[in-house]
Amino acid sequence: MTQRGERGGAVRTAVGAAALLAGVIALVTGATAAVLAVVFARKVVTPPTRREQDLRILGVDTAAGEITLAANDEARMRGRYGLWFEHDSGHARLGDVLEERDGRVRRALVSTDFGRPERATRGRINGAFHLGPWELDAPYEDVVVETPLGPAPAWRIPADPPSDRWVVQVHGRGAKRHEGLRAVEPVRAAGWDSLLISYRNDGEAPESTDRRYGLGGTEWADVVAAVHFAIEHGAREIVLMGWSMGGMISLQAVLRSAEVREHLVGVVLESPAIDWVDILRFQGGALGLPRGLGDVVARVLGAPYGGGLTGLAAPISLEELDPVARASELSVPILLMHSVDDGFVPIDGSRRLAAARPDLVRFEEFTGARHTKLWNHDPERWNGLITGWLAARTADDQDGAAVEIVG
Image 1 (tube, rainbow, N blue to C red):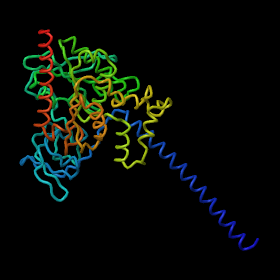
Image 2 (cartoon, helix red, strand yellow):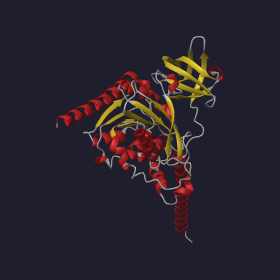
Image 3 (cartoon, helix red, strand yellow):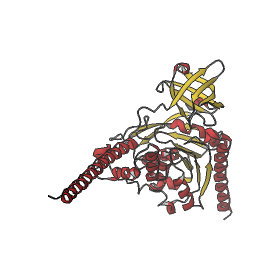
Image 4 (cartoon, rainbow, N blue to C red):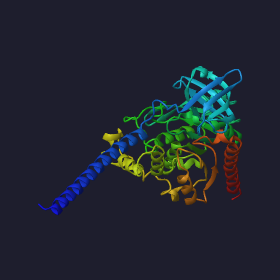
């Protein structure tokens, strides 16, 4: 073979090796992405058993009533919060930021409910400031809602005097009914009763056979049961208030249940999950996962074979859960509150829903507040919005009744 032929053979060998290597890399990358998609999909629908302690506690001065935290977006949030530490065996209440300097955030330590924060090195901030309705200046009752899966605990907190107008509170993913306690004060101020419910797989209500979240596609049936409970106990008009995934659950109950629509006069959405595909893309990017993985996760959740990978008893079609696509079916006023700095559920879905029904949706954008922490960030504005919006629903009903009597 000539020297030129030898060089040509070497080039062809190199090209072939490069092509083979590229194929191997693509195969490995594809396999890795597939594994990541399955892991991500499974995490999305699996109720958490232990919450991440993403906050570093650098020091506690109990005498001065101060705590020092390593600076991050959560540590520097404005307002009042709960602080869980020692793997949720301890709990304290945080006041506002006193100072931020040199990567450290000093906050007021309002109280310690149990545990020893001075011994803790890590914790997590929670927007649910209250531990239970007994902390509120209002009577309350432990009640049970009979759901399709069995009895689910709930709290009923009446107005003063008790009303036939009820707000049914639907908490979000990974949370419990305590989340809605922040809304009790403005709801009572408007003269409405509150019903704070639990639903399947939230750690309080009965579990489904697969013990997985349906992302709104199954939990809505428990909200229907709660509405039925409210009606049986004197409710004449109902507002659903959904937090995060609870927003999606509430909207699914509205779209799928004639009983809910018959008594519904409005919906309140706090940092709601509106577009799951968008949320998966956003969270995947925040975790540093490959671009486009969120779309793959959506396909895994909706695939007929997905149950073997995720543990779901039935596929979840995220397209069928899209309330924007069915916005024309909505018929009651909606108060929608979301922060541009949410950090967990992007605001884009809320903006699309507001744009789809500007005739029904009052859209209130917040800045600076993190996910489901609008009350914590700006309680005066948040309380005022809810009280005023509910008062308007009462006025609308009274005007309608007057017209009916005159007619």
